[in-house]
Figure 1: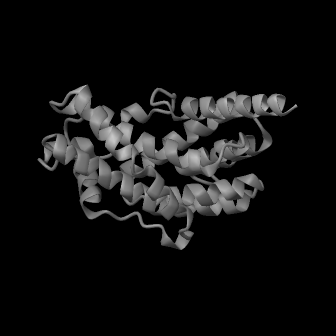
Figure 2: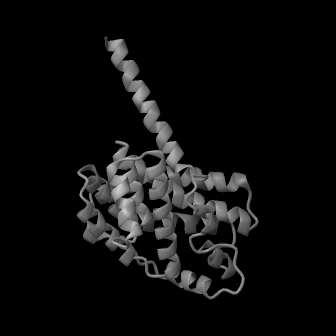
Length: 239
């Protein structure tokens, strides 16, 4: 009996891990490849010029996400476990309000809507269907961190895994864009990714103990770069 229970636990853990990998895959079809998270402007303006400045840029983006979107993500995961739509909508509004530039708002809501739509089709369930309806009827903007939290809660995947997927996505979006925008090798970007993912645990602990009122979305240089990108005549990415 113990062996059978161990086998069941191992099977469940394997399934959970596989789903985390699926929904966290950089090729998951939510349009992340179309965005650079202001890296395009950072390169054009000389803020990012090599591997060292790219590493610093990506680290800053991860820290900003951990202090902002990820606090909302963890709170939304808690609300989703009780199917509390009103609280989810309130959290979603807080995330949207902290997206100061048009491009960052567009990125979050487009990815959030696509993630919700994929969740309905792949996972199913009443909560995901209700959330999609709220987005389609403009009850809520449908930001990506909240969509991710709902999907993981519906699948009984923990908030910590949703956090990992979110932060991994932030890093890979920037590093993937770097490969198309600047002279840098896959080896260099993988080294940066390896270093940055090693900091995820500490970031999660800080975000998990924070309150929604602690969310901070303002990073002056990032906002300036987003504004510069909006006015650029030639650009490869949407943000």
